[in-house]
Image (tube, rainbow over all chains, first blue to last red; front, side, top):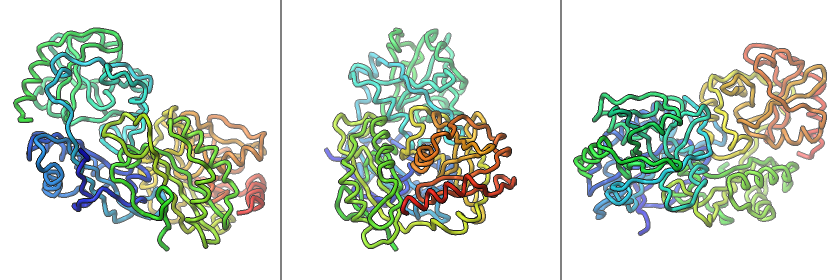
Length: 269
Length: 269
């Protein structure tokens, strides 16, 4: 099925060729899983988008308008992934942002990947990517449109048996996967990398941290991951993905991971 | 005047809303100054685009096709700036690049900025940007579409008396301006920052290095710039721009800068 797309609220699959989203990656996006007309993590997606708009100095669109457009794009689909892209719109040539930007909204609905399949039950194999994320505190955490690092990292492998790639920063800290966040469990203690220098602060990660307020957010060295009792990835699109192998090292799927999967099922996806 | 735009060779100002150029900044661009039907630095632009395609694993378009499209877009203009954007085209959702990409070409002609005005004769004022460039060797030197650092740096000021902003990396090395390269002269010796960790390797910079093979390419600390006898910026769109003030420190416009301006005029712009 071709994705259904709205641009600025109108059914259209075209945008201005000189939009700054394309010219400079000047914008943000959210990738949101819907079950029918509802997106259980909607409020968290809007919270992150609002934070991104604040940091990039973009006007935040009305969430009610975005929700209506997401429902229109995904109408008739039992389950959908809706991508909302917000750019700074068109403007004069050059990096200087226009004083009064007129942002472009693109809302597109896609068939979702499995949410409760073999990856979620048996776990996934993850490789270690050679690419190292460059620390840029001004962009860290944001889901912005500058994603060449993720594209290059994802291009490092094409073995379909490998579901994800782990990314470290240039200092040897484990940060996240190409399209998911990372959690490790040490003696029952849930831990996830700090993302104040690079990486995307996922909405699924935010949900987990809210559900487990005792969880620790701190720098995690790659070498520490081998000592973890459990490892899993979180994604607002794919849920909780146990890691059964990282870079040749095997992990068991443990009780903290299973408990969070139960939490996820209860969210209403 | 509205810019004239061709998309994949057809007169059009629209592209697919799901193009990876917009979705991820997955692509490259060149900004090329034309004098009538000729672009004196055309071969160097094509060389950089080819290098970018090789590093991002994009198929390089036929330069003859690009030149024909650039001439069509800029037809009737005495002078023009032509922006050529090349993206990885559309594909399935997700970072994984399609195995057989069908790139999108966008060729747009704009009115050029002055080439031999007060900025070139008297020099410009440059500020020091607070943003620090994040070192990413896999993308360093390329004119790719991930330009949020430049957008944020350029948004730091709106005083029209300040023409450019100098960017350092996180290690305190001077790298480049938001949209130009940096040269310093020490006791007659031309010097420019190494760009193997961040920054864009400009086509004007390449022309200068070819014209002055004795020039030194090395890491330059910000603190060293104050000791320079001459400072200037290079841009394929604006030529050689003497720096008369950097962050409150004054510089004279010297003979090396003037000799390179003469070289520039002889190129045929």
